[in-house]
Image 1 (tube, rainbow, N blue to C red):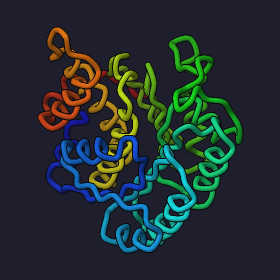
Image 2 (image 1 turned 135 degrees about the horizontal axis):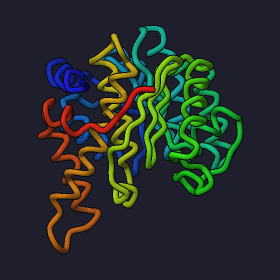
Image 3 (image 1 turned 180 degrees about the vertical axis):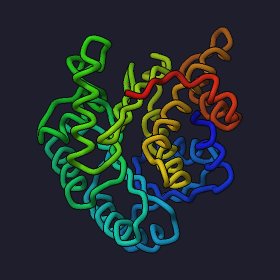
Length: 273
């Protein structure tokens, strides 16, 4: 059952340093507060080492890169590694440009993240060293389906073994794996793809869950993925006539805020393989 992971987050209020993109920074902060965590946002190179030092983990999101933020990512990442903190890498749009691809791969190889979370195109880009994405979305040729599920599970486990990181691939079917086991998760709604930032929010939440549940980080990240997917389902069900993606964004955050361990245990749709 995943509910104990949720309860640990509520009890411990993990503090997460976020170097994230300016498109979704407010939603990431609010999602972290909703799940029971506490966010700090800082991408100033002269500030990030101190900020990371007082946090339990670091969430690095490359969605709107610039040279200053790249510098800050490596400074904060080095400090987090030195302190033994959780580091999550969200390689937004890796494969869409040389800068994004090169930066994400360098972070992966230099900082050695604890968790890597992205769509299948982004994760394949990190694994292969090159790739293509549709903007910041997965390429239509890259999907996890029932037909290729066994191969994708093996790929995810192998990439986890190679990187020594928990790998979270999110899409229609979500995979969260270490080298030994993979959570196959089927929560969520397709309408969530019409909201900018659900993936960014999930990365912040996953970092908080891993900080609060250090003894089983794979289970913790799987719980976070189920929380976000289930929030999408419940939030969509609560939409009124005439409401759309803007309201769904708010309903998802509200649902995360109100979610209980019992709701998560009953609503999480997953198997371990």
